[in-house]
Image 1: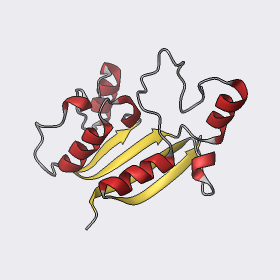
Image 2 (image 1 turned 90 degrees about the vertical axis):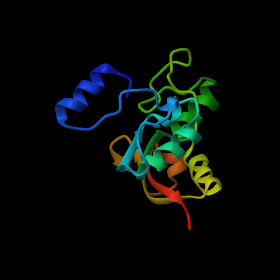
Image 3 (image 1 turned 30 degrees about the horizontal axis):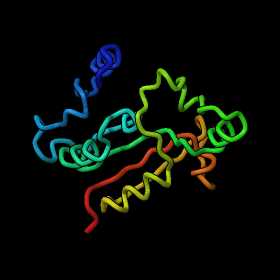
Image 4 (image 1 turned 135 degrees about the vertical axis):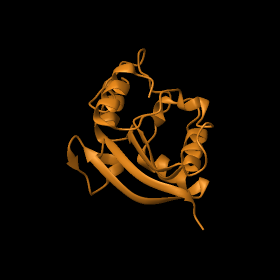
Amino acid sequence: EIDQKAIAECVRRGVNVLHGDLDEGLSEYPDKSFHYVILNGSLSEVRHPRKVISEALRVGEKVVVGFPNFCHLGARLQISLLGRVPINRSLPFQWYDTPNLHFLSLKDFILFCRQEGLKVLSVFHFWGYHRVYFFPNLFADYSIFLITGLQG
């Protein structure tokens, strides 16, 4: 985490938090230091997502990855009908002030995991606070994956 207020809130709640830039790596942590590494909302904001996921899997047994789905129906409609970059609950920023560097869909991430030999242990898709079970790449605006290292 790089936001000082978020760090203070984590400390207040007794949650361990890394203060720093994920793109700089997690080299100060030995292999399998944690049961879980949580990358919730950060994957689209780092410069080198493949490296960050690799490092997270090195220091953690499992990694929780949450990200906004750029290809859900609302985003598709904003692009096709309005001709504008989507702004919604999961992607709340204007194009010129977004921290997002990478825009991905659920299918993109599943393909990435397959290509990298990563195993998806579970996945949860949401539209707001509601679970999405059918056609999640179309209807879910946010997804959370639990992944582990190389498939064997």
